[in-house]
Length: 225
Image 1: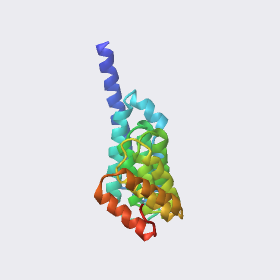
Image 2: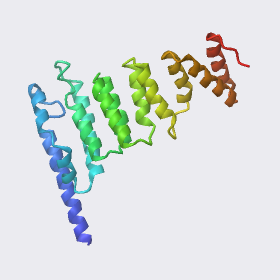
Image 3: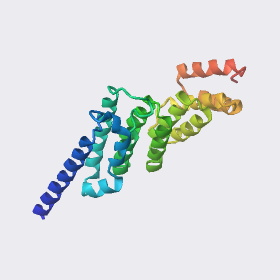
Image 4: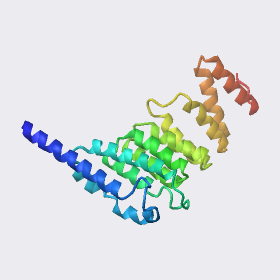
């Protein structure tokens, strides 16, 4: 039994090294073959292949793919080429990472942020949505998706949709409940915003928070009874 475990471990390590060598040989870090980057995407292994190649060590291989993705992102910052071609590999590498480990929350959070930084917004949305589908009980993906819609895409209705989801999940940051009424107000739902602020005002002993809420309600012409 012990020899069998050792054999499986060595086989898995060999598979990881093989996959790593293939990826490096294709120039995913942005070194060499710059003009062929768009075509090179065809050489990325499929998630199905990587699952078999991992021989059960999917999370280890997911870590490797995550490292490759961050190396590629860093390498692309130094490569000069047209914007549509730049960072072309980023989403496929990130997608492979979470296909191997669907519960890799850190990869969703920081991967989505990297996609946002390079203005691949549609891919960032798809990536966060995939993360939420795989981890519906975690607040991180709906929170980050709401932030993307609010700050970058200027879509307050969708931002509100995702932040309402995040607000109902355990472990969410304390500032989310304070932000949700503001989004209601910005989407034209004044009555709901006022209702939520009043409820928050009456349920907290935090004088600073009460002062903030009082100021917002006064601007709306609402008196606190």
